Image 1 (cartoon, rainbow, N blue to C red):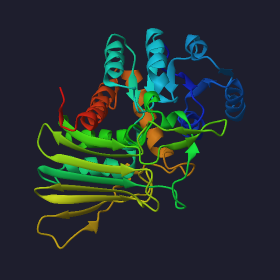
Image 2 (cartoon, helix red, strand yellow):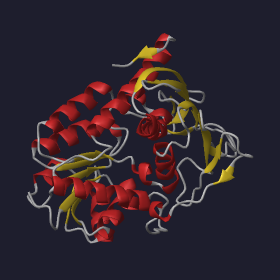
Image 3 (cartoon, rainbow, N blue to C red):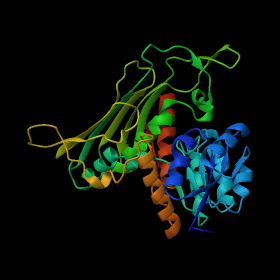
Length: 360
């Protein structure tokens, strides 16, 4: 398989056209083909980005000899069949989060990837956002000391109040919809990245506003969560709690507080994602109080004004390419996707049973 002048195929034209395709092209990767369930959307993406081939069947894209890697940017229910088909065809895979519909699917993909020479990664690009990368560096340097507690809150919602919304796959739990999978998965990945493996989880999910309107303007009910809470216990000690909701008008975004024996770190977000210019507040035990820490330049190697996710995504792409060239799967890889999915499944199981769930 080629590594120089690598060709990639992108399946999905939502986030795929906003961030991924421009990011691949800026990193010197040829986007050979694009695929969408609607051929007209695939054709438009091909025309907009000067992509040679377009399809409405991902199998045709995967079958092309000039497609060395496949980026999966579809709704979660399609991740498993597309990723498995790509691996069987010997293609490298970059897969969006949430990785799968459940831990069983995630483990199957992890196992299948290990049986190939393919590089596989999960698109948790926020590991490379300056704010979160700096937090990771500070933790590794011992700023917190021994971690004791992490607290995360994520609140957002329409300022005019919550009203019946169009019914889409994102509101269907069986299709991988819901705020926990869509956004909670990013924060769970961050917590694992910072503090290691999780030994137990306790949580709850709610659908406070289930009313939806389908394509025929008939009222229907959403099955996916719009609010969640969880507590994680880490194998190395310490706990993390998170409460998130997409039905909190004027919610104000996110706040991350990390507490340890030697210090505290705080990150504020005006929206659901870490901003490209986000800072970190910190204080060591015995100091006067929180102050903004000076962000090292290495965490902001360049600017990309098109979208707040563009720069971290391009840094992830560089790791992906380096992994292909060296024959490894850099983290976050399919193992990380499996472990994150175990936690997501554990939260849902805990919500059903009303008790904490131990993880293997």
